[in-house]
Image 1 (cartoon, rainbow, N blue to C red):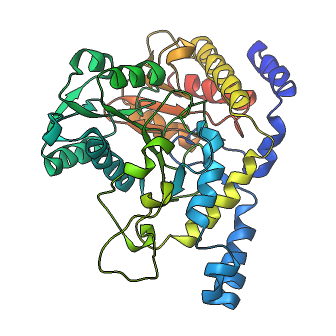
Image 2 (image 1 turned 180 degrees about the vertical axis):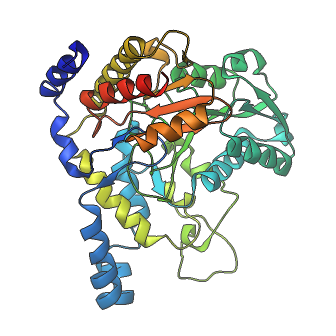
Length: 397
C-alpha cells in the first residue's frame, strides 16, 4: 500500500463526519459529481412512498392540511436557512433556480427604484452559468435597464449611481473559484444597489452567511450539495428588511394574501411568502425535506473544514500520481478562493472522463477541456480521493 493510501486510511479514521456516509445510498463507485447531482439520502425512498401511498393515495386532498402540504415551501425553507446563514422566515422553497433568478433580479431592480430613479443598469458576472446571463439580459430588457457583463473582479470598478442590481455566482461552476461575497456585497451596497447571489455551488458545501453579510436576495438549487434529487425545487431568500417592498414579477395565487379568496386584484402575502407563485411541487418538495435530515447534528463549518482537507489531499495525490504537464489545475489553491471543487484542464478531457467513469470514478466534463471533480464531504472520504487521483494517473499514462 502506498504512503498516500496509508495516509488516507488515517485521515478517514480521524474524520468526524465519516459516520454521515451511512445516511446515503452508495456503492463502490467514487462519486465526485455531487456538484451536479447529490447522492440519494437513505431516508428518501420510504418518505416518498409514504407521500405517494398514504398522503396522496389515502388522504388525498386532505393532505394539503393534515400532511402539511400547504406550508411546505416555507417550512422547508426554514430547514435550508441555517445551511446558508439565514434566520427563519426569509426563505421560500419552490420553482427552479432559473425562475427564482428572474424573480430576484426583477425584484432587485424594483427595490432599487429602477430607471425612474436613475438606476438603469444591471451588472452580471460575465463568466456566470449561462442561464443566469440569459435571464439577466431578459430582466434588464423587461425593466428598461441596460445590461453590463463584467468579471467579478471588475465589479467594484463599474458600480455607480446608475447601478440598480448586481447578480453574481458565489462559486464559479467551471473552475470552482470562490468569490468574495462579503466584500462584493459591501461594494454593491456602497453604490446604493441591490446584491443578488446565486448559491448553487456553495450551499451545503461552505458557510455563506447571508444575514451576517447583508445579502439582499439570493437563490439556489437543492439537488447538488443539498442532495434533494433530480429537479428538486430551488429556493429564494428575501432579506427580512426588504420583504414588505419585494415586488415579484410573478405574482401567483399561492403568494396572494388571500389565496382562496379568488380576488380579481393582487395583494401580496406578508414576508417571504410573496416569493411563492403557483401550486408547490409536493412530491419533489417532500423528498427534499427528507433529504435535509442528513444535516441533523452536522455543522456547515465542519463540512467546510473537511472540504478543504479533501481538495488539498486530492491535489497532492494528483501531483504524485499524474505525470507532470498532463493536467493543469484551474481551481485556486488558496483556501479563501476555493469552493468544494477541483477543475483540471487536460487534452481530450471528454474522453478522459469517459474512461474514468468506466473505471468507477465519476466526475464530469465541461467544454472544451476541463475535468470537474466535486467533493461532497458528507459522503466522500479520503480513500475515495486517493483512489480517484491514482486512477486518473493510470488513465493518463
